Length: 615
Image (cartoon, rainbow, N blue to C red; front, side, top):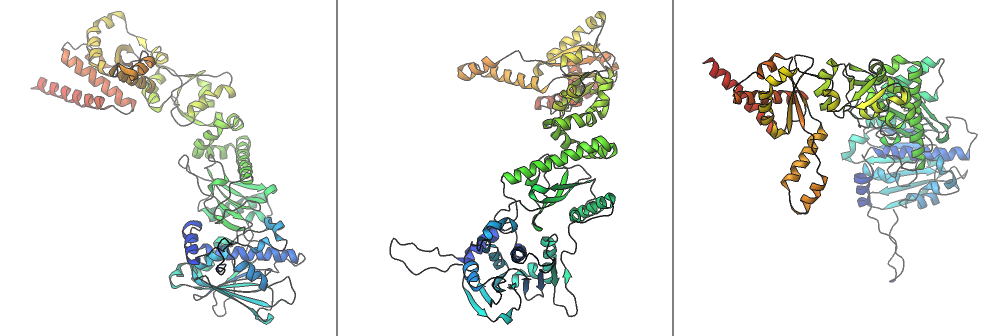
């Protein structure tokens, strides 16, 4: 809060004039997510002060220095036994926006030991109070006096030196008098809850008191993180980690993966979600830096494919952003992300090798995440492709089982193509995999890398129709007139009509038509409509013989045998349109407007014919 200098002659340097209220408004709306961060910033400053004190007194016993929170509804107080501030420190650091005490007195070389990096945290207190009172005594000088600093929301401050008796021991006490509209964040119960929220994993003892007569202060962080404790057996450790994950995230993990990266001082757990999540949804992870909660939504700590876990981690060397609510994207974070990804791969590999039951439950819930990983990871592909479930003409099964039954595995390019042919391909003994889902087609084509004896090919109409039996010549000649009328009726859809026999006999017709063929016909149609001019020349150059759809009628079906014998031309045309519409509906692809109209019209025409016949 540097005060403006007196007016200077033209051309001379001038100090910036800071509107503190405007700056606090900027912090509250654009830097910090919520006024609650004021307590985190005070805790952080206290932890850093304790870290500096420990540097001065390395032989002090563990727990000698701590932090005490107090809130009784009228004030909020944070007191620490840290390094404290001298009068010069107060003038230099508390009265200058953006300057951190951690830049001074040789501490700059040790900044990796501190949480704070930006020196603006104290300003966050103005989000809930109009006055900040700081009472501090430096531990650097044995006989240092106490120093009092009062900062006000209008940008003014005062400093005075007090007798050492005003604060007998080194450290700092920050006292806030909350504004009347900030009770949501400063009530005793809320201060206690915020202390636990942000400081549950801090290494220094933190206590809370609400001033109730006779009530003892309660610990905010009574136990270290479970990964920092020792347990009598591996099983008890696993149960403790799972219980902690359930407490933090609210679900019982399918399994917990312990994370440990000594190079960056990172420890924690990844909790495997027990149920599937929508593809691409990235859950936030709970990230602590040196014990202080940084973020509950840090999705940048893991790669996108790892959406089947939620993590709690505590790291020493990750760098927070200015708001200290997310992680700074740098080479260290990238390396940590890669290392954690490798830990997840290793867990999957261990489950595949030694715990088939766990692997089965995991794949049942998260096969899509594993498929996305297997596409880019040869090791996971080798380990898990035989185990992954796919939709096939034999039902939902693994590729390993499917390839044992079908030496040639056919794969469709879309879900609608699979639905068109599944029943008939199955009856014909063809092994077809639905390749229309994300990653499936690409993975099926890589099956020979795992099973060299397997053969994989894309399913095309010729492959399917080759397995449909032709009718005898006499039957085809008898149906020729009907087939000619049917082709004429369906010419508007670029659809040919053929008569075959195939199972199941309950299927009257099969519509063979790929998405690519429809797109090609649409392009050819556009080229015909745009003849002439530059656009016509371009489309004409791209034009090729557009593949036609094919309506294959099943001679084994009683309805088809009745239809091909119809001798009334209009009724024959209507029946062919109805058979086409029914086959199009069974394909489950989106209907074009003309097809919807045809289905409605053919139904009404057949109904009218039936009513006339009965009357």
